[in-house]
Image 1 (cartoon, helix red, strand yellow):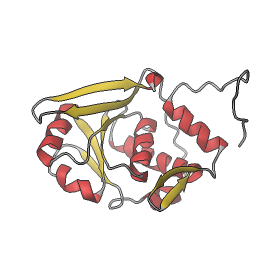
Image 2: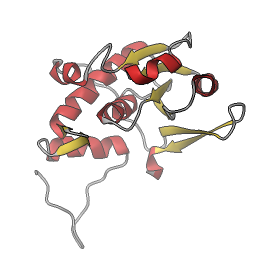
Image 3: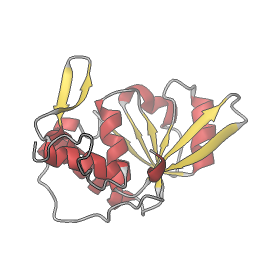
Length: 187
């Protein structure tokens, strides 16, 4: 690690956003495990490359501020998609992938998703929704492919603390979705 652990009386680095915290971990601990799911793990170095590659794809599809709906189970793909959405300056809308298709459709329309990120197991429940771009991880592109992509020269603007870190959705009834945004500074 480049920096010592911070204890009592030691200065702490200024980390104003969750994206800055992730970038710092990529720089300081590239070989440490960033994500682990079942018997697969991904280091911060590889996760950082995958996030950057997916962020470039997202930025080519939608403008900053657009909603990126994540319809993903707890997985490495979720972690990569979440940080890529932040890096591309989209607002991640975190949807429960176990919701039935009609409920997901209601929520997706509510947030006006510019792009939907899914996996094959959730694609069929969101695939009929027109008007949104779709990236199906492990189908259109794999994490391994994202890791292997050459790092682009395009630099994306860093998010500000007041920008959304997530739009969280909850729906007790399909007709009554609730939406709230959480700024990065609150994480």
